[in-house]
Image 1: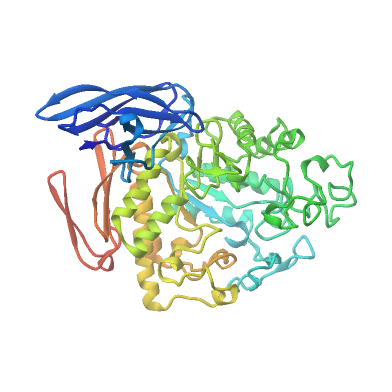
Image 2: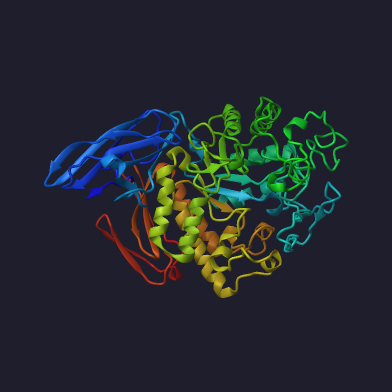
Length: 598
């Protein structure tokens, strides 16, 4: 019998992702077996190397085989241990364990750039996401700046929606009036939640309420405010030690924009109307496309850009480009929309532009899967290896937390968390955004006690509200979910309204106006407590992670730094559970009996 575990430093030291030119010591242990295995290792896409392991010790029948390997290049590596010319070997079977079999999954090793650095000022903090049109209106806007926008005076109204799921005609012409001045007015509220960073969904001029169809990257949407309003927001936020992150939508523009101008809102020029337009080379025009030009997911209103076009790169990343313009006007970083659809080379240009404005400027990418193993457009992505993103929106943590709180199975939870913990560079993981809800997902409170909406249309979704019994349970589940997410590596993120118990299925029902008139203090107070505790413990900024207990209903884990530890324990069940850690017995009360105990 042979044994290896990639998560145990006795077998693999150091643990997890490593910097280039680092050495790992591999140790395989056997019980009375003396046939030495080969370490088989290969860089992604390359041939494998075989290194015969040597016997380091043989005591009482326990044989210890070791070897070292220098990882001298950045990349993703795979390894296993083989015997007898490869007829069988030790392969990964989950939880870091290796099992003897004829074939199986190889272990994974991340090797990142030795100069990879991500901003310390965001680590250990708390992020708050704001959908600008739906947060707070500083004063009524009876007349909007464009005649095709519909102003919604009653903030309790539902957003407009089209119940035809296959339609491109998602209705985005309803505006509730939220603006930058409104955010300024509510900065004290946000700060009181313990927030250190605000992420704003797009604020540039665009002709939809979500503003992901950019019309002008260099201009604030006039119904949100002015450049001076933005500068003031950054100034006031910085006075409260709150950073401001902007949403960069660089894979496509709007068809209704100064660049493409299909709708001719901006005169007769633009790439669609003029073959000699300065913007023409940004886009792919060809009769093979349904609309005559390449579109994002075939939406005709979202023409895709050629991100590697030199003129486009200069416009976004140049000395007078979009990135530097907004960072020099007060922003602290960018979140890249659909980062996995942007070429690595383009992301690297963006990174250089961001970091030219200061090492503490942040670059986050929207990636829904494990960003280390992610494959898109036929190749393995490199954006977390030190030359691209600082980190990503950590959707795998979201899935693990919500699945555990809703369905149970602590063992599965630990595995999903630890896969990311093992694969990601620590610099990236400490700045990963850990959300439970976003503008692209149903709200967490609705997921926890609502029905699965996948096969149900928008008309059905629009009418759904949890009854009192389900709502009370969902609020406690939500608090437990936030307790887990606030303790894990990365930056916990609060989607506006989650903290007051707002409900909602998919877009647009997850984007309703903030119900300032109806705030749930149970969730809100618990989130404040979690933020306060997190902000007062450095273990959450730089600390390691290990699990001390996992059952079907209960999770307990430790964050540690400099010989200090903090323990998080959550019981989603109806019965008290006990566990022992460091010679101390702990009792974790059922979810129905507690708030959050700090």
